[in-house]
Image (tube, rainbow, N blue to C red):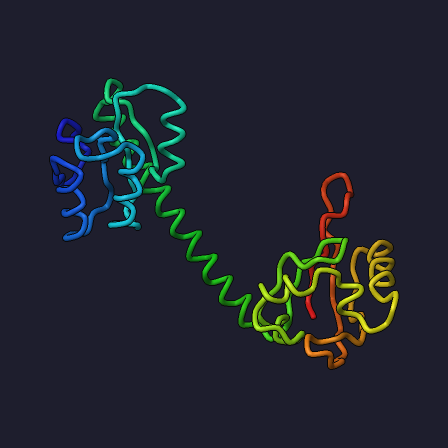
Length: 225
């Protein structure tokens, strides 16, 4: 890094895995350059140990083995990149560090967006669902579980494995729902009496659309209650 005039970095060197983990536990770092084979480490296991101590710090692994399967394993184990020692140059290392930081920031932004979406998804008063054509729930939010009398979306999805026979009070109501969906691909205010988990009956109104692949094959239904 010192050979590149564009590089501005404070480098802390640790001579062993133990020393490196101690450093990570005491200070904040932007990126870790990790020697893949260390005297007191165990290859891929090193990545897990580093991520346990500093889960938010991106890792660039450096090793002497120039084999694609090794690089793939290292990235799958949690590193942002794997560099071969014999191919290192100031420009190559700097680019790898920059890309690692950029990818890490993108990953963090994606996680934050998912957290925000999940918060919105679970705090809506409308029930949201995704079901297979065969009548199983593959996604539900907390509001839908509450409407149907279940403690959680997971409990709902485990408890209702056949919507037609478990949920609808009127025989053939699920078939009518599917017929209308086949004809129009959307449906609004499809009103039906349904059984809650405790056996009581309530009325619901469903708004739904069919999701299909490029060939027109039905993948699933998704909508609100």
